[in-house]
Length: 380
Ligand SMILES: Cc1ncc(COP(=O)(O)O)c(C=O)c1O
Image (cartoon, rainbow, N blue to C red; front, top):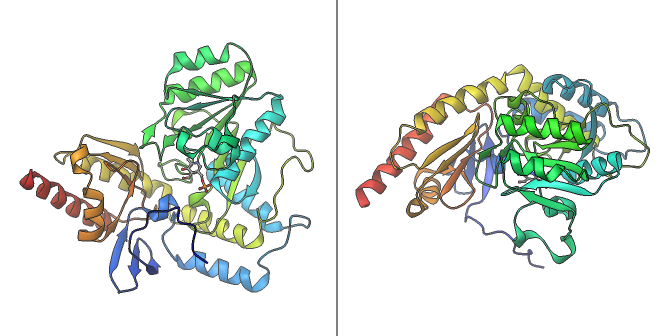
């Protein structure tokens, strides 16, 4: 049997990982500023994480949501505390797309409406509703097409106000910082406008925090920079540091009914142990502050370099936009300097490192990146 070939692959096999480094099967060490797509939040194979998962595995790995799982309540309490949303409620699932599906569905149950506002360049996942609110027709199969989604220009307050006037909007879904779309920040004013319109029209504000959440931006949810609360936060990626766990944090005004949401695997014992270990490390090691500090350092240093068109981002979610003719830089960083980075488009490099990356590691990247840019200037 062959694998269904849906990913263009780098010819690299990772066999070992620790902190912000990974090693391939030939013993070559790489600096990981990609974190497997913003997933590695507390560093690879963090000792506390490994121990908590290992201990849990020896007790019970899985049982279904038909019994009490006290680890879920422990996780809800910890998440409420670390995220600063103690009075919210937690529903656990397995992936970012699934979190967004559940959020959009819950919003529709809540106000009985069907229309959803999403934004240009948004990415919310690949399942039915999640892909329908994703602004990439190439990912949408005919069966996913729907008239219920209205795409508006990002950060355009006038278009948003206009869209609400029919009073038929169920929810607005927005990434605080667009990831796949190229590291575009939702302005504080725009998020405040979404809040006030949702209040005025009884619509639901869904903050997709799957990539930009979990402390990466220097606040727990990147939407927090705006000073307003969303009604539902969706999260995944950094939540389990690689263990598939996701969730939605739900404002108190939503009242649960049995069976309105559900899952087989969501919130299992191992997933909760992974998520708890991540939050414990984030809290104990002050990783949100570190994300802010190293992120500011990286962005300030990057802004001094030549050739770059723009540096965008917050905390450790950074986009470096290069002129089109420099799109080889990302591959060169990987193959010449052994540094993994992400990309939005070939000319937009995304930095999504672990939140405990050090200044020394940031400097290794800055030195390599400067060398690459200098060599491009010489060859130009
Ligand atoms: C903002 C955002 N939402 C949702 C998703 C989908 O998450 P998953 O791949 O876990 O379904 C992603 C994945 O990249 C994402 O970046």
